[in-house]
Each structure stands twice: as C-alpha cells, then as structure tokens.
Length: 214
Image 1: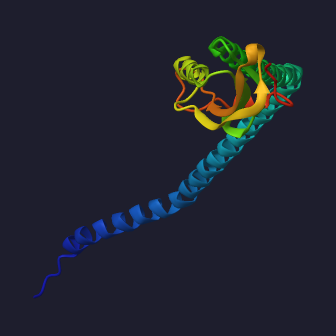
Image 2: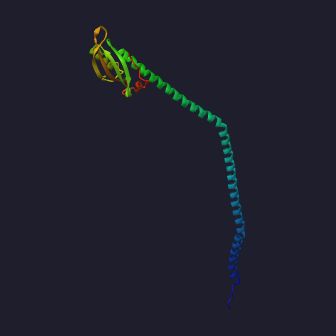
C-alpha cells in the first residue's frame, strides 16, 4: 500500500506564498516612491527658480545703485576733465614761455659776445643771420691784425664753432679812415653754438629782419 505524505507537500509550498506576498508589497509602494521623487524634483526646481529671482533682484538693485552713483559723480567727473584740460593748457603756456625766454636770450648772448670780441680799429657795418645759426658779419678795419684778433676772440668766446670763416677781405683803394689810413673791408661767417651743446642753436636765426651791429 502506497502512502502519500501530504503534510510534507504543504510545508514545501508555504515559502512560495510568502515570496509572492513580498513582491506584492514592493509593487504597492512604487507609487509612493514615485510621488516622493516628483515632490523632490518640484522642490528643487522651485528653489532654483527662487534663487534666480533673488539674484535677479540683487542685480537690479546693484544696477540702480551704479546708475545713481554715476549720476551723482557726473559733475565731479566733469570738473576733473576740465581741470585736466586746464592743466594741459597751462603746461603748454609754461613751455611756450620758456621757449620764448630761451629764444630771447639767444640774440642777447649773440650780440653780447660779438660786441665783446671787437678789437680796436675794427667795427661792424652789417650782420646777416642765415638758417642753422650761421651769422655773416661785414665790417671794416685798418689792419689785418685786428681782423685776426676779432676772429680769435669769437672762437675763444665759446659761443661760436671753430673755425670762423673769412669770406672776403679787400683793401678799399681810395678809401681812407682817420689819419689817412687805408681801410680793409671784410666779411666773415660764424656758426653760433650754445656752450655745452653739440649742435648749433638755431634760435639765433629767429630774430625778425636780423639785428645790425655798427
């Protein structure tokens, strides 16, 4: 006679029922989990939107403040610009005045050095200024020695470049000075140079019309 153990079969079937119950519980919780994820996403989006709104409000406030500061500082900036423009004009005027003083001093030094270099028995009849500070001196003398002394005095004054050139020196026949001495007409050319400068001072040629020495 065959016996069937139904109790054993019952016991082995019970775990399968418990597993199906667990899967059913997890499936029932999925809507809740999905709802929580959706709520979290909505909260994050709302927070991001609120942060962007606050940042936008802050930028608007800073922009308004900057515009107010610009309007408040506009008169000050205008005064600064006017001051800088006036300062530039004053600097240009000072520079012009200094240049004019220098230009006025050059002819004074020129005439002073020429007059101090004149020896006895020699006098000038004319003086012509040319570009690059060249000066032509015309005059008369009773001896060639006086002419040589005049040229040496000019070169030693420190205001004329070496050498001082003799353009011409002619004895004037039939022309005599005091005591019946025959006169020598001469023309020389010299280049005016400010001491300490390697270049001739062209300011000497700026005197209108050219001064004359007699």
